[in-house]
Image 1 (tube, rainbow, N blue to C red):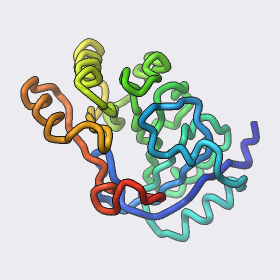
Image 2 (tube, rainbow, N blue to C red):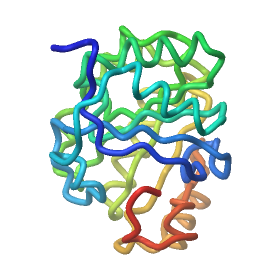
Image 3 (cartoon, rainbow, N blue to C red):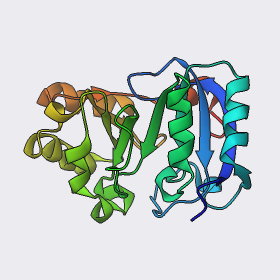
Amino acid sequence: MDSERLHINEIFYSLQGESTHAGRPCVFVRLTGCNLRCKWCDTEYAFYEGRRMRTAEVAEIIAKYRCDLIEITGGEPLLQEGVYPLMQSLLDSGKAVMIETSGSIDVSRLDPRVIKIMDLKCPGSGECDRNLWSNLEYLTPRDEIKFVVADRTDYEWAREAIASRRLADRVGAVLLSPVFGRLEPAELAGWILEDRIPARMQLQLHKQIWGADKRGV
């Protein structure tokens, strides 16, 4: 694997749409390629599209936005070796760096300064068996866990995982997000309130602002 180059799908400046950082201006670096094929994936274009760029070139583009919050996403960004020197460079320059990962790839190599947003896969994704549960050992109170919930079965699975694995004690926030256009937010909100689980509900802010089909937000 080439640690000097990255396969980049897109780099853009927008508002952070998810996590406890929602609403903050953020530079997004979307890497090409993913080892999963979630049924509800809304970024299938990131499976293949993109171009090769040197890590130094990527860092230069990011610097032009003059923004202190960077999110590296995908696809699955941890599939590319070049992501590690890129994150190191950004951290050393004083940036806050978030990485959104499916949780199917080992996160033990990540610099502890990186904010990990781990998207654990519910049964409705079709990729539930790919969750690498040993990754939980490397999560800290600065990190967050996300469940994308398609239906009641997904919700109950997430509720059990939160309780049995004591996820709220491991991370700063546990987030439940409805699959856009499939599960009504009010329904998920009702379940969370009824069960009083230690989790936050989130909506994809970028989709509320710009719509579901707009790429790059």
